[in-house]
Image (spheres, rainbow, N blue to C red):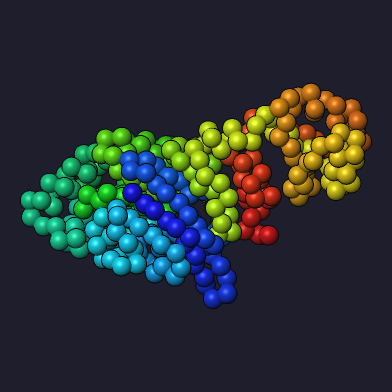
Length: 307
């Protein structure tokens, strides 16, 4: 449904996307996971036809983005991170004007609005001004705008921005229902690990490069064993000592050392006994998506935009 090959994008001399290649199958949810500055928004803007393709190839629904972006706009629905609703208009008025942009009118538009409002549980709010709705309800109206012309692909940029945890869960339940009931292909950019866990497939994006792809379970399983993290004041020195004494290669991340080990609890005990003065604290657990990010990129997720 979406095929991206060697996509590269520059802002002046800065490379925002570097030879990005991805394939998204029909009827699935793909999450683009990455910190601020990773290139997620640039990729979103290219796929939504806001930015031209500088280098590489992008095909959506079998249509080349370079050759026929106007045709693609009728096949995709887009929900932006920034609000796009007019708060002074009613929900129905916002949706009607969106429908007009796609050539919808009369009974066809009216029926489509009613259908979406029923599915999104907003039928009783059609006549309400948008400014009177909660953040979660407004987000659902944003999604309704993107779905109004019945697209084959729905592209969402940080869809849960500004939502409380309950509204975020409701949003994802609806996206999964949309995938299951209509077979729609959904692409989501996110920096939230809990959202990434709900996707069928993930692409971890860091500094414009795809660091890893796979399902959340596949990515976690790729690390193998337990994740052991040691915090110390002198990570470089302790790293050298562990390498000499235990023949283990720990990865230095800030003031911490980390390693994936099949029997992490046994290794943890041995290290604490060997270096009681050097080790400040330790953490042991099953691999998470953040562990995957660190393993693939060499730095912490939330430190990426400041490095």
